[in-house]
Image (cartoon, rainbow, N blue to C red; front, side, top):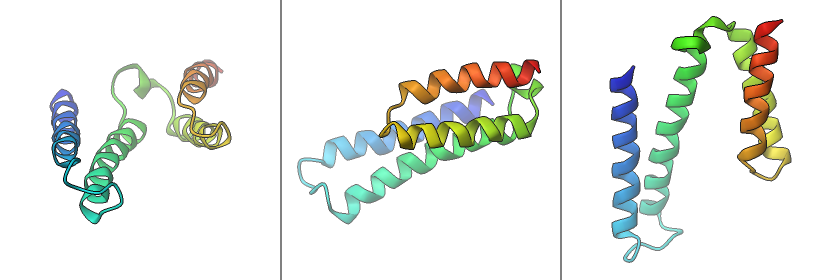
Length: 102
């Protein structure tokens, strides 16, 4: 699992670093810039999906239905709060711990 985290981190870093280097020559609305952005987000989405479906550590003690429920609720909160990351992060920790303890 640590190897997967390292690989995805490196992949994300490489794509973002390449985007930063070429950003002076590439327009923000160009296909190349969009491709780098999509690769970075796809890598992050894959990591989050793996954590929800095949968790490790203490997260594995919770049922998958609880993890999926918390994920859906937090995505809705993220959208409703106009893409604020702080609120869904705090809610996810509280909601996961409450639902797991029930």
